[in-house]
Amino acid sequence: MSDTPVVAQKSPFPVEVTEGKTYFWCSCGKSSKQPFCDGSHKGSDFAPVKFTAPADKKVFFCGCKASARSPLCDGSHSKL
Image (cartoon, rainbow, N blue to C red):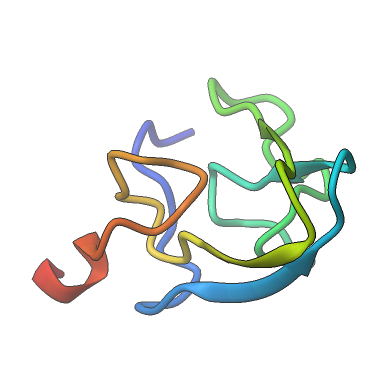
């Protein structure tokens, strides 16, 4: 299996998160439940990234899987 993630989309996923709730962001790009993990990484070196919401708000989860601030978008998709 490749050590390069699949680009799920070249834009972030806006998600309304709930304070204190934990989310597991897909790092491999193969999940059918983007931006969240569905276990598609099994058998690879990829693992989901845990994110606990600090407040009730909208956050932007990385869709290109290239963010240096994963699981959140840092604009890396604009360079793809």
